[in-house]
Length: 552
Image (cartoon, rainbow, N blue to C red):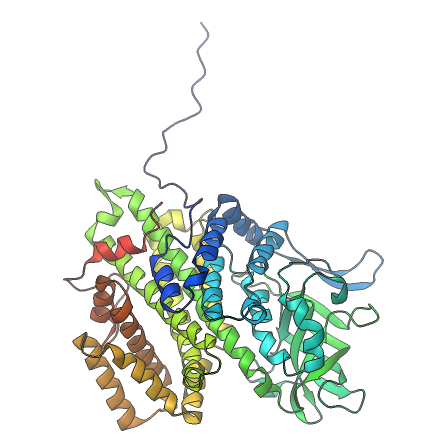
């Protein structure tokens, strides 16, 4: 008698949440939608909704996975032995870059200026990084370069139309032959890191020197971001001191500039994006601004890229919260869904509060960038940009780890997105200046424009009287500043207290009452001393968690 073969299946797969795909990233993020309207970009709601739906498609999310699973590889020579210094990417990278550039995340506020343009772009960045954060690097650098490039009128006239294009052109050919262009940058060197004045790359004038003239560069860059870009801003020591230069990838005669890739960085995260080490062997570049004014020339660029660091971490945190709340709403343990387990509800609510506080702050900061002609807003953003970057980027890794723990082992495997989010989150805290650099920059901003503190405190006080915990926090902060001033050793402490006060005021004024209550109860006064999930009694935890959950 012939026995029938046993069925292949040994068990039925149960109690697993459905994949978080084919959903609208924007429509399911109530905090972001509300902030976009509040900060003056309500005209962009339909566009952002369309973008959120495209990003949420299963195939787009899969492209993010593929771009990281198959990172870029250097192709330094062709088969004949000639240097080509190229980088080869998986097709998924180019697909995602086309999405970001097509949405105008690289230069739209400059190419199409209108009230709320920086706010709308900020929301787009928050959405984009949730699917793939690597594209943020060339997108952000192109965004930040524009104000600096405008200081070199001849270069601006030639290059800005290319940078403003929404056509992503991946071809490695001279920029005049392309339908669009992107820019990178190279600032740091081995011996200096954040101490840019320690740079040793030499710039030798070829035509007498001066703004807009050509120089020969010899030296290296330890972090040369996105070497596949069409041009770069770099720092080098000219006869007059540290200066800023525009370095194209190709020269006017069509030959490749002498920028030699040594290797690509093997990074903890950000795997899809190419970061490189390069040497300049007589590369030709043009002076932007005055000799010796390299750092002031790029300061404005640094402000924009630092804004994007805060936006990037905000987006990554939002996706971590979305994944955690989605998982908990569909997964059961001990006869109850995870989201209904009181301790888990506390954890989810706490994560949601952190994410929404970051969203409120960065969208308010983006509005300050929209008001370029308002001196008060200029002072506000000069101080709040490094402060927001410091605190939001510092909170990100802890939130990512806690959100991963919600998924348990399912979150710790590479099939899930949680590991990628977790590895990505420390980058924004390091990129464009680490935590100490940011806090010291806040002190420098206060020394140069002391009225900036009064402007921030005035905005915080618009919520005065609405919550005694915020009032007490602000009073303690102002008393401390009056008594001790701004001591360098206490910079982190003061920046943290200031950012928390502004986040609290924004949530009290504009957010759901439960979110504001939870924030003030857990983060003001002595601050949040414990892990996530330590919200006190009396907070409507379930309402907060449900507000953050992408309900699809």
